[in-house]
Image (cartoon, rainbow, N blue to C red):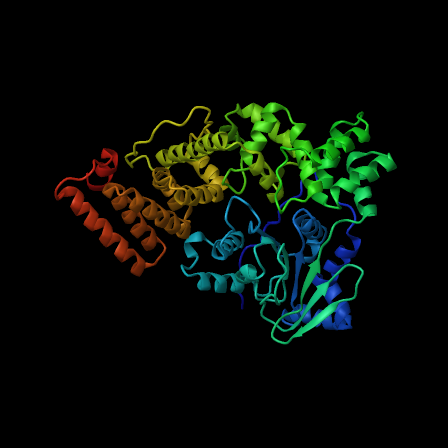
Length: 552
């Protein structure tokens, strides 16, 4: 019998304020590939489908949507997922692997698996230490469940292997820019099919693989693009619409931005916007990158130039921010703007389709928009903005640490930079709710500071998140945090910081149940503590607060 878990809540991101049009052929292909009824029609009889669904082992349902950036892969996948939620009574799982993000690294498979385990109701303390054991637990929990697993922006289909449920009672939908060299390695048997809308299936026999398909996605047709623009902007000027469409190349990303500008200025002739786009194509300040086509680059540049000055400042600050998404207080710190004004500006950027509010109060950029903003950002301003962002997270986390672990002596920290807005935390519940919302950002920012030699920030972020990690039971995250802190402490060469990092790493390994890994870390911490008590010769002065915390 499969292990019983609580029903899974809706875990697929919402598409807020995004109209959908066209893609009828592609939606039919997804129906055929992923829905039990569609799969049954290909097998020949409905009875075969009922037998397969009951056993959970007759047929695998998996498809990868492959296409260039901005072509609408996620848009299509989320629309299909919401429209067909009734087919998956046990819930839907969604992870954005950030395979195309120009700033943050892709999500490691083991981290994504742990996220799925948490969504399935697993206590974080019960998650096994090794990645293979975590994947086995994930597949055991998925056995027999009728769920949709949506793996978004995969760096490659191989990267998604650990996230495949290992059962054919669930369906798998992958989006990626990279065409898979072979079939998805899902347990089962069947074929690989490359699907192009309007063409028959291309079937490649593969006896040891499931019935996996690849849907090659291209731009919207002129009719579909026109329908989307008219529905989004409410315009009825056919000739002007056709002129605008030529600059969008059928890309839903570009169409959404153009439609937002038309809707924001309903009394302005469309010819004016067309002229702006035409001028933006050859504008000397428009960044030229290989990934952003000329039409999309012109659309982005015209949208950027149309923003008010403080909105431009916020938009350009968001591009280099090394976090997967952002809330209003962090964005306010990033741009050194008042929180109330930042909230208004984020709504304006959302209305302009330059950011997406993927969860209430949480915003992110499409990777191509992010790439454009990176190219426009001024390095000195970006460096100051990043300092403020790090200070926002560091000092807010330190507040939470003092609330959750008041018995722990605080470490010494410099005051936050001017313009930093700290999230107000007054109770333990405040601290835990903030940490739950910001955990991914904190972990990503920690790795970023270590990669960029901001080692003082790295170990201080680790220290400031430790109590929250312990209270919430994220034992594996705690191990990774202190491994990164040890790396930073070694580069600093400060014995007291090294001792703190090694000791906390040892305790993290013990909490995770990995006693063999804990022993070397604790031995190293003990040796460093002895050195601090009885130093040989001279050594640089250590932070007294750290020494007292360790050996007091």
